[in-house]
Length: 220
Image (cartoon, rainbow, N blue to C red):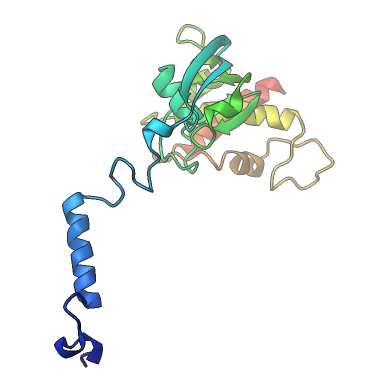
C-alpha cells in the first residue's frame, strides 16, 4: 500500500521520498567509489595535520632513530622504515600472529602497537634471532621438523615460540595452567594454549609442536 505521504499531492516542490533519497545516495557512492575519500574526509585524518615524532630504540641490537607519523604501527616502522620485511603483515588486526616480534623479552603483535610506545625499547625480529650461517636453535628445529610450508607465518611462529619458552621459564602461567603456584611445564595443552595466537593456514601445527618440544627439551 502506498504511503499517503509519498503521493504527489502531499509533497512540496523540494520534497523527496525515502526511496528517492536512497537511490540518490547509492548513485553518489557508486560514482565516488567509496565514502570518505575526499582530502578532508571525516573518516581519514588530514595528512597535513599529522603529528611527526622522532623515536629511538634498539632493533636487533642496533640503535635506530626514526622520524615518522605518530600513528605508525611498530609493524610498519619495521617493514617500511627499516626494511626488515621478515616480520609479516597478515590480517593487520592482531588475529593471525604473523607480525609477532619480541620486545623487552616478551612477544608483541606489532600490528596492534604504535612504534612511539616503544621509545627506548629493545626489539628483536626474526632477522635478529639468527643468520643463515648460524641459525637460532628454534630456526634450526623448524627446518629439521619441516615446521613450515608456505613460510608466511614462520617468522611470527618462531619469535612467538622463543618468547613463549622464556615465559614458561619465568613462571608465567597460562589459561590452562592448573596450579598457579607451581612452575609451569611445557605440556601438550600448555603448548597449544600458548601458541594459539599464531595461525598456520597450511596446517603444519604438529611439526611446529615437535620443533618447539625439541628446543624446550634441550633447554631443560
